[in-house]
Length: 164
Length: 142
Image 1 (tube, chains in turn green, cyan):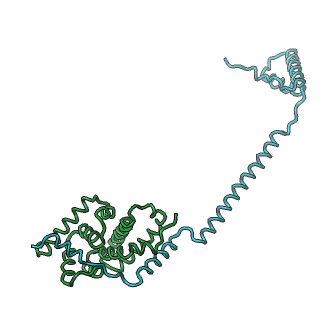
Image 2 (cartoon, rainbow over the protein chains, first blue to last red):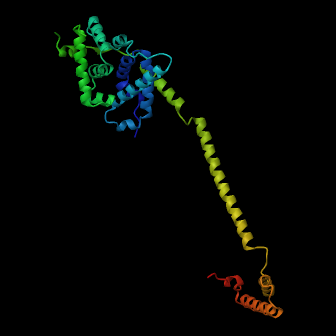
Image 3 (cartoon, helix red, strand yellow):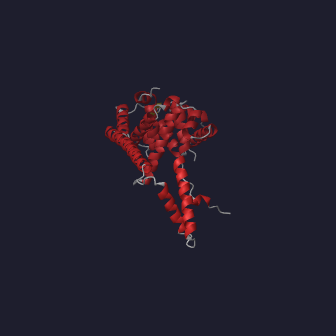
């Protein structure tokens, strides 16, 4: 069995994972560091990757785990981690909206919803993962993921209307 | 009031921006570099590991060979023990002396008779090629 080529892996998931990590970590530099770790792991598992049913979900799960490890190291390190501190800027760097006002409104609303809801919305709408894939990435049930999405959208709507 | 669908539609209008130039090359290069650094068996270690394995195999072989030779020597020593087979007279004399030491009150005639019995037994045993029946073999505990 031939291992999967690292270059092919990057072409398939590299940029999407970079955007996801940038938004999750709030820093493009941190995202690039973590992405390198993710690819180290993917290469390490390269022989087994052929057996993985949903490679995209698997790759995103590794990215999520690596991001969590990175944040934990940062918390235990000298600087306290604030993953969403640069969220608005990271979102603007990763995704372009129809206009500047929309970008600002969406970024402001996304910043104010809980992390787990924001993650589901980003993976579902911006990266096009199915609820099943997001469930595999986050280790939650499909129902939980779908609920988080609904609550997140509802909260964003409220926030964008100017409510609390 | 904005409908929920409005928010989803607005989010769907967002599109991914291109990633910074050279990201792919940098990521792959760095990942490969990290894998090389973390590899347990670097070429140098591979040689050390292989040499150690060969030395270990040689030492096991040598140990086995030395043990075998030593075993042969010991066997040879045990089979060809220094003491030669005693003559029936000498054997009988030794056995009688051993027994008589425990029987100090025996008279001279009985001693002589006992010695003769032992001598006859040893001679018979020497002729049949079997070891003589030892006195001790006749001791039973009830």
